[in-house]
Length: 231
Image (cartoon, rainbow, N blue to C red; front, side):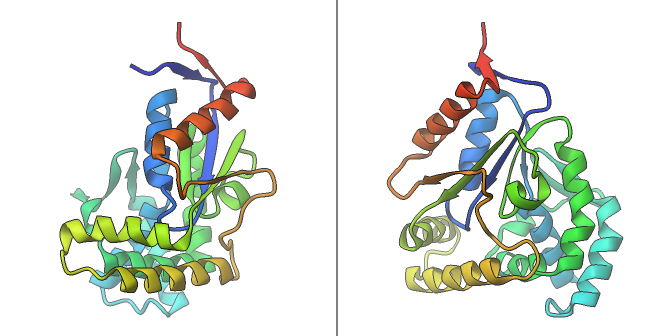
C-alpha cells in the first residue's frame, strides 16, 4: 500500500549516468507516490535494437534519423515496457550490444528530436521519468529534478552484477572500460549531453541503498508540498 499521494500532473525528472541506479530508484519512487515510471532509455535501446536487426549503420545519422522517424508513431511505450508490431521488445533491448548501440543512437540529434514529442506526451499526465537529459531538455519544467550518480567503480560493479547473472564469464574490468567510454560519449555528444540541470538536486548513491535514495527524494517532494500522506 502506498503512503503518499502526488499532486495532479506531478513530473519528477531523474537523470544520471549508466549504473547510477536511476531505474531502480525511479521504480520504487513511482510505487511510493502512485505515478507511472517512464524509462526514456528504452526508446533509444529500441531504436538501436531495430537498427541492429535491419543492419542499419549506427554511425550513419541519416539512416538513424529515417529509421526513428518511421518507427516513432508505431511505438507502444508502456509503463511496463516497449512494444512494436504486436511484439514485446522489452527483453530484447536489455543486452550489452543493444546498450552500446543505444549510446550511439542517442548521440544522433535527429533521433532525439524525433522521439521528444512522444516523451512529452507520455509525461503530460504525470510521471517519474529517468534518463540523461530529462531535467535539462525533455521536461525542463518538471516540478522536481534529481541527478543521481555514483563512483565509476561502483557503477561498473552494479552493471557487472547484472550482466553476470546472464553471462558468468563477464569481466568486471571490461565492463568498467565500456562504462567509462559510454560516459565520455554521453557527456561529449553535441546534442543534449549528459549534464546536471541547474535546478536539480544531486544525490551520490555510491554508499547508499536504493531505499535510502528514495527516502531522500520523498523528503524533497514532501517539503515542496508535491506529495502528501495518504489518509
